[in-house]
Image (cartoon, rainbow, N blue to C red; front, side, top):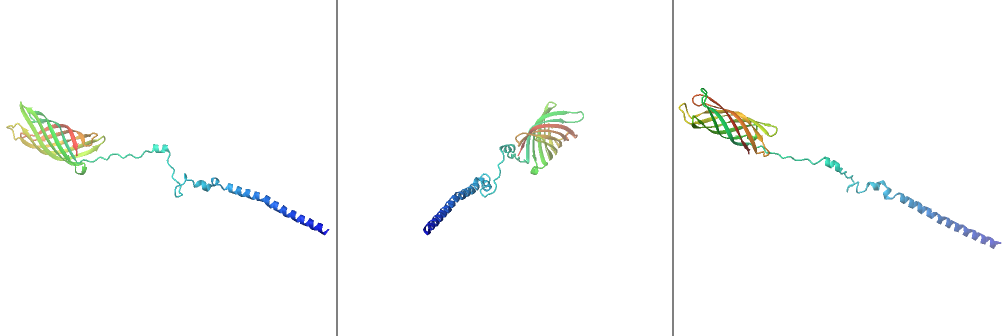
Length: 240
């Protein structure tokens, strides 16, 4: 009986140890599956930290890259245009045609229509609105069947105003001397002269060139009397 009881105890002890090993082996798969499930939930593509660190959303130093404007916004906002800056010319020289209606004596009226050349030069210090004006006029005609010549040279101030559309308005007052031919028995060939008037310069695409229209009243003192003669000139202005 003692031997039978001893064998039964050994069998029971062996059976209990085998069952414990089997139960421990069956618990291992559940632990590994839980670990794999934990790793799968922390994959990079599901983590917001990895999503924010992509190159398209950040710069090389981790700062957010600036968004580029849409093509439509770029088209609607063209780059600024730089316009040309034109130089102010201090000197102006003019040459043109002049008509002078010269009244020799007032009573009875003796009129001499002359045509000729008008030359002028103006200097505006530092491009200011006031300048120094000089003018030379030479015209030719006939009186009583004889050829006549009238010439004068004068200088004085000129004032100008800029107007729209490339126009420049100006006025001047000049004083100087005049010379008249032929010689007469009524007085000297030379006389004091003055001129008051103005005009307009019409600019063109070339800023150095303009067209001038001018009208003046010329006063002289020949033959011991006064002459008041209208003068009209047209010409081309060169700026430099």
